[in-house]
Length: 100
Image 1 (tube, rainbow, N blue to C red):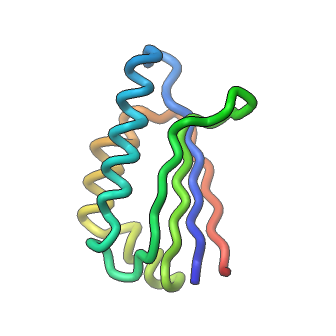
Image 2 (cartoon, rainbow, N blue to C red; image 1 turned 135 degrees about the horizontal axis):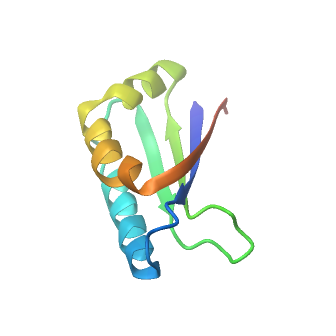
Image 3 (cartoon, one colour; image 1 turned 120 degrees about the vertical axis):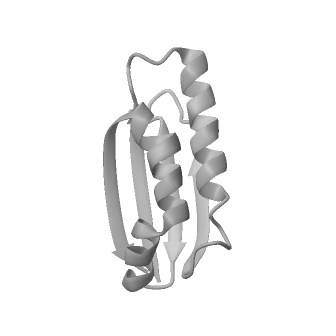
């Protein structure tokens, strides 16, 4: 099993309301991928960080293997969410993948 964890910071120019809406769209879009991508075991998005956080959105996903992670990265449904709901609104992305 492989964990795929990402932290994003949203763009500074977004208002508080826009950040809330964008975060909700990221959560809905990514969590909807469960059951649609081979090897994706679980996926959860956190959008309510504590004030002590320096990230706005966190993806915590589990995949069957490193090969499944590679397939997830290029899967058309994942790419559509990334290109439509994530990349246009984020200024920073940090990723850590590791074996369980």
